Length: 374
Image 1 (cartoon, rainbow, N blue to C red):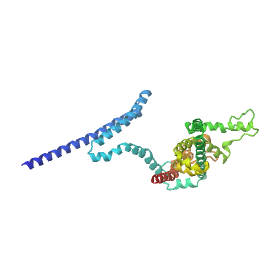
Image 2: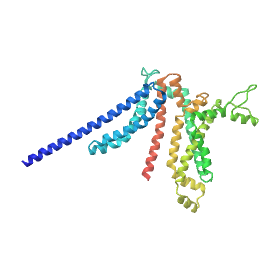
Image 3: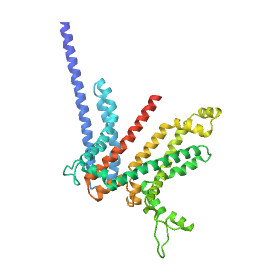
Image 4: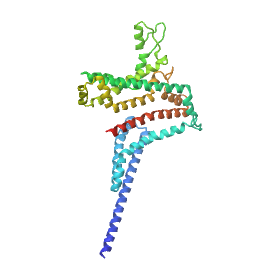
């Protein structure tokens, strides 16, 4: 009799616990759904509303900040309602899940759609196979863009990182370090378009004629020294190097700051020991400083290489890609928005993506080696 009662109470307890658990799961499921629907309605309001601009701005700010916080809080609460093992398994995804979804929605899906469009014609209606890729690797203009991007990648990256490293080493030994670094880093606060406009005035060429004065800085200096003004941005292949100067001007400050912070992390005892052993400053630099900051150098080089591969703003503002200065990103822009050829533009975008992937993979491989070494 007692065993029957125990079994009955055990069954009742099990069923009661099951009902409670299922109830918690159902409630925790509907709460995020309702939260999402409310947030979605706010989005619809922001998209379609004819309310005053100030109201829309305030709602957007409140919805943007509070909406994200609510989603995290509600999602975390939902996971905590699940049984213990499931909570431990799912809780990490509460925090990385939104980032993964956003990356998938705004990166993975567009890449897939672009890949599909790259095998279609100019309006994306008919399959044309590899015709767009054949164009990308055989057209004279495209070959010119590859050459120019390679030039930007090699020359621009070398000078940006080299000058950044040199300035970082020299500035660290000066009592006016903060002043020097502030001046070198200042161009980083300027947008690429803004930098292009500034340097366009530097290279401006008005031409020869009565009553025409040169307003370009370089031509003004050349004329003051008794020389003759030149159309600097119309002189291939030198015009590419004149444009690369702008990239070096912008990126040297970034390289300097990152490398300088790495150099300051080198133990002073290590450098002092090298000097006591008779090492010169040059030997200490190449044998100790460079190996110690190798990881930072790789990061800086990778960042600037990727920037040089997807370069667009400077060329678009300065020359529009004319006179032998075209680059891959600018040709993509022309094919898509000037010529209206979706297929060729998509193929160029995929080629640019493929060009960036080896740089990123190599960077990750180097980081893995360093992690194993430590």
